[in-house]
Length: 299
Length: 247
Image: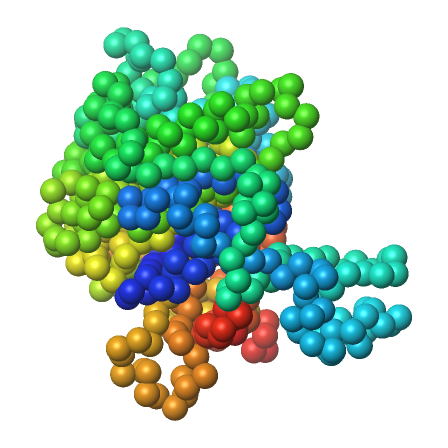
């Protein structure tokens, strides 16, 4: 369960959200997109186009051609950015490709978008609450979303319930701006919310659904609007990974010469410690991001 | 015997202590009731195997009663209509009452015919979560009190509970629960992240507080501080400033 604290205007967290979904399409995963703000159909029309093998060469210039040399493994050490260039020779290297690269100035083609099965949940178009769910004691928007996710997981066999299914696939769930007023929750506009437990209960049930199925989920939350910090602490404890994006727009850091090449900071608040006593902590803790015309980079 | 141990973490993840106590008590031959609210059974099982214990086998022979909170929650919300005689221990999700959870604990550790295990143990990971799920602080403290009376006093067993606490926390309910529990604990193991931030060789500091003053009025609490490093199958402890990297 990846929890992203949105930057002030939601610009960059939205981009990260789209990257997650785009990566799902390129990997052939099923998608489930939920929002109370934008219709999921529109979100899916705005995904960045992947930098696929043949276009990559043209995009990244002649340097790319030079990299496709015999000594593939050596060149990788210097030109790691070209990881997704085609391997012409079948080298027995242990090199693995992790993730794909995208061009944010281009939109993903409709054909590629349609190549996977996707499910959408747009709050304002959803059916009303089932009677049983009234006993859950939770915000109805969240309850409906949970019911919808559970139904897809069960029907499509992501929980292993269908032994007949030959190829098991992963379900990528993206939930936009959870906790915002549009979901019918006032955690983001009041420091004494009417129902302070709805959001945390929602996350707990979602966590249960994720643990019991082949799925991963990214949630963005306008954390900067939350006045009740206690809820943020609880939400962090309920998530596996917590990342915060802080944009420099309108802040004094915008003019700080130290940050002149960047648009904001990435704060990794928490990483998961799953199935092990140890966790995978990286050596770099200070991360910043920048958005150029074609690429979003974190370094 | 009859001890209440509080595991506490600040600025770090104290779950390694939970894994330790779980395998420790199982190896000692105790009957364990583990209320695991935040992680799946397989997570604990995989780590326990690294520590030399099989949770699946312990469950099989009746030594371990494992409440997998995440799974029970799904059964409660998406499953069939529950029987009124057998309320789900996770009932507090809808009704904010922790009675059913306590009844579950008591039933799990009640002396059974047949096997005589060495003393019952209640292990809970983690208590702070109950507040997030709608339980009131007073209800949580009552629940713990009932567990102490039942497990520590009546059954002469031990209770080990993990809570999270942040410095400068704004979660007043959690701070209330944590402070109250500290006062009533026999032993407190407090894992703290280093004030100076992350370090590769020292993952944190642990403060061990033996609350001798709880039982004997004239006694002073004994406080020991160690630093630790977590490895794949082990945690090493050393005196502050004496990590292997420094020496």
